[in-house]
Length: 135
Image 1 (tube, one colour):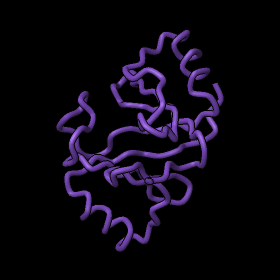
Image 2: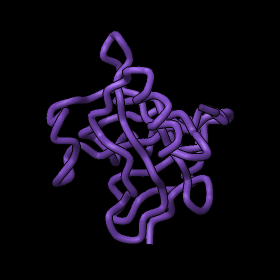
Image 3: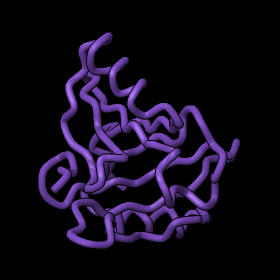
């Protein structure tokens, strides 16, 4: 499996507007992408990216309905399906199988698994530009 770099670290919040303002206005990070609906944005933090996820929005992660704080660490890979096959062969169990996201007009392919301590990890493959863009 080839990891091309860290794509992002994800942060859950119920104070999306406040955290967006803090990271953009106070820290000066630029919004470089997001998903349609405006409840997930990507912030440029230099050598990596912060994915800010609004937990007050409908939907969310049913596996972690009340989670706040750091959510997952994403590895960028050139081929999610190949990385999934390689890790599965090594005994890694995935709780989110490879899929396109979002469901309409997908801009990424992803899959999720956990490390031995239970930390959530993501395989992330951009399908167009490096960051998804809202409509």
